[in-house]
Image 1 (cartoon, helix red, strand yellow):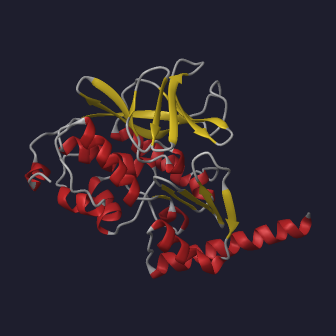
Image 2: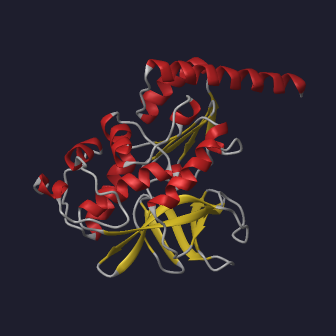
Image 3: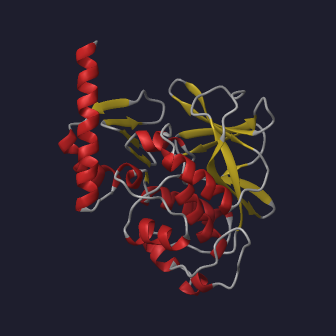
Length: 298
């Protein structure tokens, strides 16, 4: 790995926070020891290492905490405390890392589809990145859970890429936006669509507040943890654990409430404080009671 002096680079971007940042600690967190030159190869390797180490999760929200996007809080949570986060947290942190290394990084806002048809108009609520390397733009997203790409995707209409055995396609949607699709066992799945308009930290802050407080937000209503693995992807939604492998139907298992802390620790690498764990178990017990009552009513 190159000398760690790059963590104190004088390069600053108008888009990303210029506060002090411990790049060495971040690289240790994701287990990265490769090159740090701003190349496509470095970008690809960093994205894969980040996804291997940092899970997607909303546990602060469902245990009574707040999601803060300033760099100091992101560094403390995702790096020092070795937690995960959702799109606004992960992509802002990753953008800061890339920016410090000399990459040209631009934010974009996406309209999540999650399987809905591409003509469906949904609100902008997702933060993603566009990184320019050697004159070419690449879609980079480390914050879209276990359906997201594991490597940069060239922003070109009709391009199809394979990340190991996972397949992705980028095309133009019926409303003229870029449409990211993922091939599942049952065909192409629409993830989200996005345009070319600039997107800044202030936009992410606004969307972050909405999705972490609105009562209809899935991140307010559900327990969520996901891991985007190279050969296996894991998703926890409330007390249902899903395992997805390339080309195969998902495998699902209902968890007992008492299993939850061990599953989070062993499958997702997430260890909560005793207070958070207690709050999470109480939340899960309520979910289990509601589910049991619904089954009795059927």
